[in-house]
Amino acid sequence: MASTTSKGNYYRKRSKEYYEKLGFFTQITEFVTSIKTPKGTFYKKIDIAGADGLSMNGKEIIFWNSKATTEDRENGISKMKSEAKVEFEKYPFPPCVKRQVIIWLPRKEPLIFDL
Image (tube, one colour):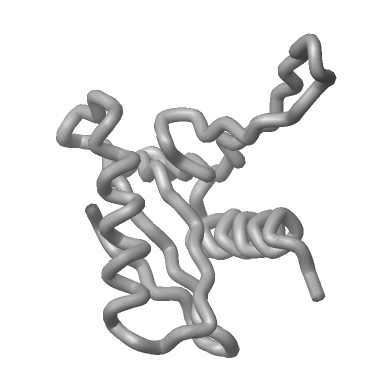
């Protein structure tokens, strides 16, 4: 069974490739930093501006968050959209910048939602 981290990395990579196929320059905006404490070192994942990636093509700039679900039910998808919206609302995006959540369902094209 794959770990949560490896699943996240897989769908983040698929999202990056998806936007690149649409003609966007795309960059992953997530990084891992180490934090040293008296009890040892631990690692923390940090998303820049709450996004997994940034895509732009000269006409639009999109900050996106990648999610995956095995559920095809609307309530699971709504929860993911709400979580992404709450995260994006923490940052002062100008109106010209798009914020999207890209949700991957098994063996289907991704669902893209503007937030």
